[in-house]
Image (cartoon, rainbow, N blue to C red; front, side, top):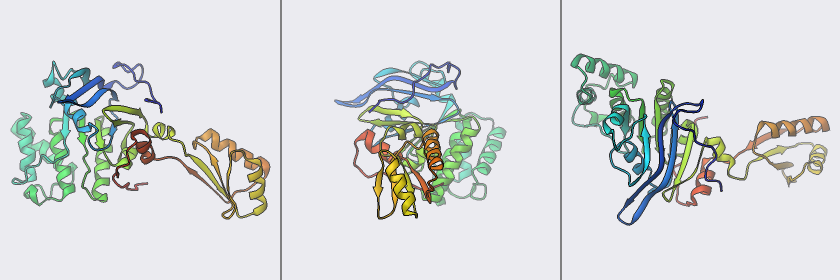
Length: 332
C-alpha cells in the first residue's frame, strides 16, 4: 500500500497555496511508548486538513504539539511560518484551539464567556463587547447570550466554544474531534460553520473519528496509525487506493443483458437480477468508454450505478483496525 498519494510542496507553495502548517519527522514518546514515529504533514493555507486514526493513534498529541501545548522529541515544525519551539508566542497569536472537551464555563453566561476571552486577548473594552456581540450573532447565540452556559445544549456549547476561539481572529484553527457526542443536526450545523470559516480564509486542522465528516469537509486527509502516517491525499485519492470500485449495469431485456455479458471483459454476472458488475475507479474516462461502447453496440441498460470505496474502507485498509468507528451521517 503506498504511504502517500500526493507530493508535498515547500512553504513557498511552488505556485500552490502557501503552507499554514508543516511538520517534518515529528516524533514523541511517553516513557518507553512511541506515540508519533516520524510523521510528515503539509497543510495548505485556507483549506481543511483532517487527521484520521483509531483511538490512541496520536491525533490529540499532534494537535498539542502544533499548538505549543507540549514539545516534540524531534522534528521540524512551522505553524503560520513560525517555529513553536523558538517563537511560541507568534504561533499562539496566529492560532485558535477547540479541544475535545469544552472550554465553556457553565457557571457564567455565554456573553460573559465571550467577554472573558476578549479580556484574555487584551482587546479594549469597547472592541471586546463589539466582537462578542458579533460572534454571538454569527453563531446564532444572541437569544441565549445572557443565560448560564450550563443550560445550553451540546450543540450550543460547541458553537460557543468555537465563537470563543475566534475572539482573537486566528488564521489557523485546530478542532480536536469537535462533533463528538453531538446529534446529527448539530453535527451538520458544525460542518457548515467549518465551511464558512474556510470560505473566509481560515485554515482548519481537524481531527475526527467520523469518517463521513472528513469526507464532507476535508481538502486533504492523513490517516494516522501506529504513530505513522499511513497515507495522505484528498478523500478521492485515498479512496482510489482501495480496490472494490465498480460499475453496475442492470437490464430488463434478456437479449441486451446477454450481449453485454458476452462482450464486456472482466465482468461479474448476476443472471437472476440481470445485472453486470464491471471493475472501475468511477473516473470520467472509464465511464465515457463504457457508455460509448453501449451506444455503439446498440445495447441499452436500464440502470447504471457507480460504486466507489468510501473512507470506511480506506480506514480499515490502511490501519488494519477492526474496532468500531463512528456511524456515518448522510448529508448528500
